[in-house]
Structure formats: C-alpha cells, structure tokens
Length: 212
Image (cartoon, rainbow, N blue to C red; front, side):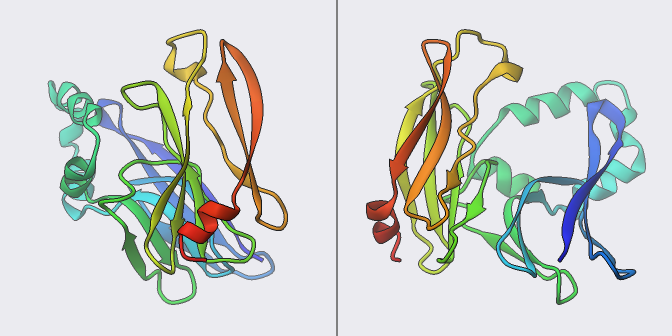
C-alpha cells in the first residue's frame, strides 16, 4: 500500500509551493511526484495517480528566483489567476496529469481541451473511467462529468445549480461526487435554496455513452 500527501511551502506574492509525495509504509521509499502546484490527487491503481498539477519549468524558475517578492508582482499573479480555460492552462502548463509512481515518475497530460479546470475525481470500481465535477461557472452551475481513460470521451452527467444562500466563495458547496460500490450510481452534495442536500444519479447510460 502507498499513500500520497502534500508538503506546502509559502512563497512570495501570496503564492505557495505545493509538493506531492508518495510514501510506501514498511520501506524507505519516499518519492517526489510533482512540485509547485498540485491538487486533488486520486489513485487510479496501485501505481498511477491522477492529479491537477502545474508542470512549468519557467514558473518553477521564477518561484525559486525570489522575483515573486518584488513590488507589483502580487497584483499580476492575482490577475492571471482570474482567467480560466485551455489558453490559461497552456500558458502555465497546468491541467490534469497521470503520474506513474513505479517508473521514475513518468507523466502524461490528460485531455487539456476537455478538462480545463480542477475538480474532485475518483476512478470507477471496474472501468478505466474517472468521475469528477467542476466549480460553479458564470451561470452558477456545477457540472457532473465522466471522463474515459479508454476512449477519451467526456460525458456531462448533470448540471446542478449552486443554490447556496451566500456569495462567500469559501462557503460554496462542491459536488464531491462518489461511486456506489458496484459503480452503477453516483451521489453528490448540493445546495437548494440555501439548504444542503444529497442527490443520487443512475450512471448506467452515462457509462455506456463514455464507451464502457
């Protein structure tokens, strides 16, 4: 068994260096998987990790140089963070990656044009299929999605209005989707008229549409 964890170091202009490491109990094995930016890792199997990460050599050099501490840089960083989408991700080399923990941390960029924002993902109990979500979009909706590692298809299962009773970003209600044990249903958290609830979706049609 292995477990993944973060080591976070504060930096200039309100930035941080987030390292993702994997430790195998009972051994001396401690592997650095990625650094600078990493979020929401999910195990695909014993040796593959699905991670939203940034793999930009230029950004790593800037972070280590101390430039981020210079006056005015913080404002620029905050402006860049407001942009979303594939163009921003391409500029920063940010997106979903699959890292191999068994072969020298080999990595593969996943669907940069289909999966353009971070989310909470988990693997189907049987299929090479990832279940995930998005944050609220400009219309206030969160999207429940499937992404097939076999076919490369992205399927929208549902769009759910983010019905929280506050505009405070820290108090949002993410979907945090999860499979039932045999992978036929999906449960999510959501808010309706300011009340937190739970919903269950049948996933059989969406799984078939993804090619499984």
